[in-house]
Image (cartoon, rainbow, N blue to C red; front, side, top):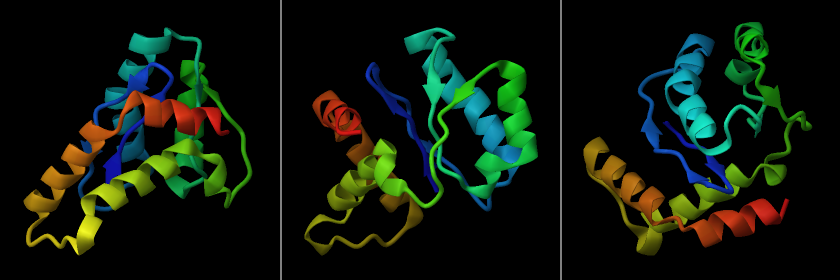
Length: 132
């Protein structure tokens, strides 16, 4: 699994997450990757959008965001079409698996995903954000 964030000021680093993720893993990822990206680009005045995965909506996670004063965008469950990052994941999948490409190892696939993430342009991100 991978984690990444986008905004009008750019994209975060792409993080490879190993194994099954629980709320405390997600909180660590947010603390180490999303918050530095958001604070660097937007200060403390930003709205964070995430899907309604159980680790995102758990009491532990929502309490974490409340304690930090992070504003979460409320949106309906089962609405991936309203989340621009879902379109970024589709772009990555198209790039990674173009021409029926198959991978023979996790490191090979990881390298391809990282290369695809690096190739996502600000124009593509802005277009997706503006479409919402």
